[in-house]
Image (cartoon, rainbow, N blue to C red; front, side, top):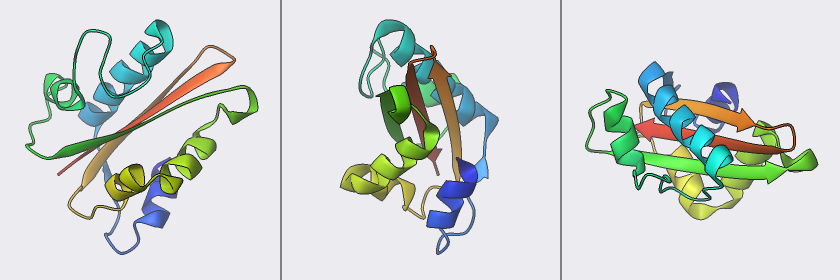
Amino acid sequence: MYSGVNRLRQDCGPIAQDPRLTDAAQRHADDMLRNGVNGHMGSDGSSPQTRITDAGYRTPYSGEVVFWGTGSAANPNQALDLWMQSPPHRGIILNCAYTAAGFATASDGNKMTVVGDFAA
């Protein structure tokens, strides 16, 4: 996922992988899969900013992209393709103010969720 995102963000320079953001993304990817959550709010009411802060990353500026797919559409490459077709998600990925990110997936063999958390 990082190589694909960094290819798209060539004008910004590479985005750094941050394990805290990966932890925040994994928390939401797992929640989406386990509890059927589709969107940015967690089943516990948590927002992306809350999950990022809970993971130990302090920033006033963050963004999140989420994906869920089934069958043959359940793969990270499909997630990146769809994010780039969505103006709000594309805007997050291409925002040069974001310097760090974490990506995570969760899968049950049929459904896959993918979450990317970005921060300055």
